[in-house]
Image 1 (cartoon, rainbow, N blue to C red):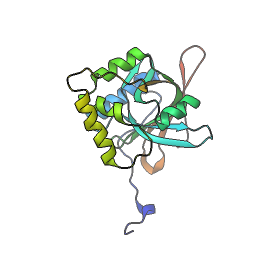
Image 2 (cartoon, one colour):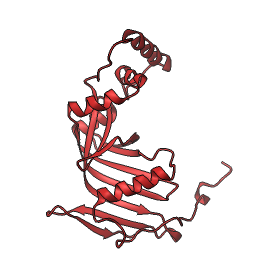
Image 3 (cartoon, rainbow, N blue to C red):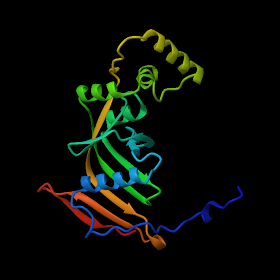
Image 4 (cartoon, rainbow, N blue to C red):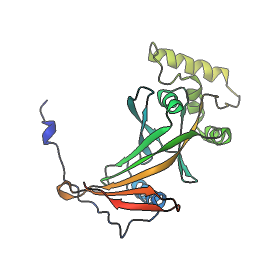
Length: 214
């Protein structure tokens, strides 16, 4: 390796985060930062790292797209028989992390996931591109397959089978809604003295703000 990994570094200088300017409501603060990420032309502003845990306590992560923020819940869609779907069925606790490199920002969210209603899942599935619907129907997500050719053959077969027909959402595919119990907003700063603001819910329905050491 030509470059030493330990020598790769940069200074963070693009912003700061103080409790006098941050919103009292973490959901509104999230929306503000998300809009800024969209406007800054981040490649995938709605991409989030989703972490789940197996029954044996082994963590796993993957990148998923956020598809909604409704009634203070973060919504994404997946195959319920995928690895994350199976893990959430056994342990609903989850974390979501958004990383926006251009803004030198991160948001980390912890909470509990539950399946969305069939109506919510049907509505979103109906909005998907035609071929994405086909893909959702034929992919045994997270399972071992013999080759890419195997999945492509299944895809083509389903395309011909359903030509001219409405494509319905498969029963093993749908949404999860995450109710947050903790937010951390992170802004990169000089000399690794980053700003970190923690939100935790209070009994009166408000959110407590605290600063964490970098």
